[in-house]
Length: 431
Image (cartoon, rainbow, N blue to C red; front, side, top):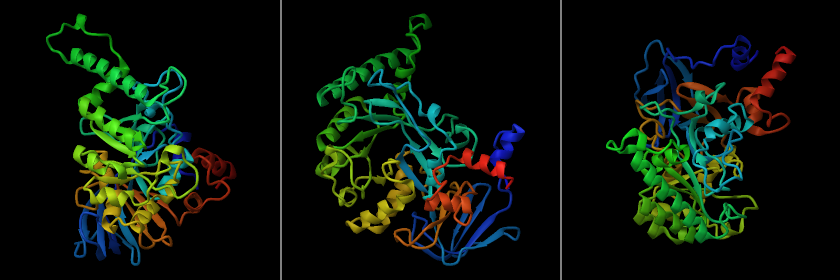
């Protein structure tokens, strides 16, 4: 049977999310709500894309569809605070600072990486341009729904704006031949100069007393930086070495930027300074060879140290650096190295939601929140467990029982094809 997306293309119709008119009750599962203690033999009730009830004594409506989840584990969908799925691209080699660039304009919603992320239980991702610039562009927060257009996946805020941040970086990644910086000091100087210029632009544009004919011409780059300077855009800052981390904190304090430290490999050396700043850290544990010289002091106890110091700690994949299908392993490795189990599960879910400022909508199983959750075959931190289903806003977007989805999860010939290629092959075969 052809996928809905192929039918929509043939008919020339947009993909429209179907309202979930009939409640669905997932019964008999072990529930990990994250916001509270685990619930054995619990029920999760969802309706019209939202969670209606969670617990052991849920009243199930007579018209509800019942799904027996005995022996299964249900937890919130995983939140990846730093990913490059969808062939995401950012700035080019023309300049080291390019805030006008939007990753929105360079994401392939049918890319195999997005399908693989669903197979790993990731339901929300902060998709970012790369780190080869001091500022490589604007990030985009996505729900990994199925869709034809990036707008079908993009998260909108209450005021209608697309949700996303700004991607900055320091350390060795943006250091190369001119016009890029050649030293760490020059990197900081260039970024400070750009922020000062943006401050002046933003002040003039916002000044009600300044006549329109005396205001500067519209500057898309400075306009984007206004969001970082006024706090409406979070700065997601790639950084590794402890001295680079402190540079980020110094600039963030000077310009009142709201920052999430991304990677922060040597954060364990400066935890007191990070804790004093109130800045959260999204980190990752690489369990494969490779990397770069500035990550040589990787410490697998870092998540535990950050948590013990009171720092809001999350995980990310940096996919394709770490495969999205193995995201749960980040938490498992952190627990093995001293992080409490409940803290590690929060780092996969609600902590990431807080970093993306989406915690009122996602990150826990609570009534009123979006029905984003995953169904697992067993303990989420066990290597023997699998993601069986991923649900976003009450719609199933991954089902391991489906052969196509299983291929995305397990690998093999065809697993790396973009979804459009799979659809074309199915259409040609008449299946």
